[in-house]
Length: 121
Image 1 (cartoon, rainbow, N blue to C red):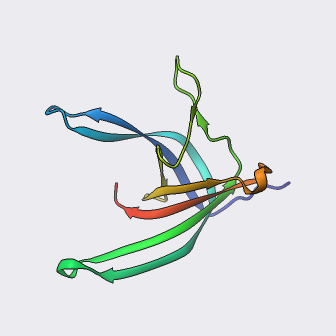
Image 2: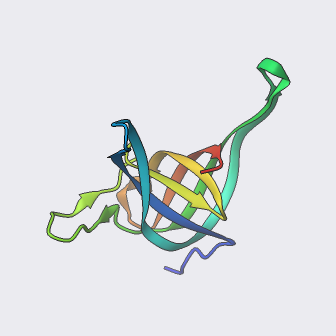
């Protein structure tokens, strides 16, 4: 089977919670998978004016890429699983919340990663 290729570069980041100087919890993201290449397609979207006339983009996307295992390694610890709850994606500099990782029919041919656009980091 050939490679999927693509025209978009992506990075998967894992969220770690740290405490700031006054004890508040701050999310801190670190890259765990870099150099992913795939195709990004709009699934659904809208751009409305909300309160105070602010224009908000709401969109969902699908990132299609070659299959990879959804694990990351931390030195001295067992392999950790990458899940929608603990990860986000940066695609060409734009931040996306991961909604779902899908390995269609468990065939390990490619991954479909369902995303929600969240804007800046």
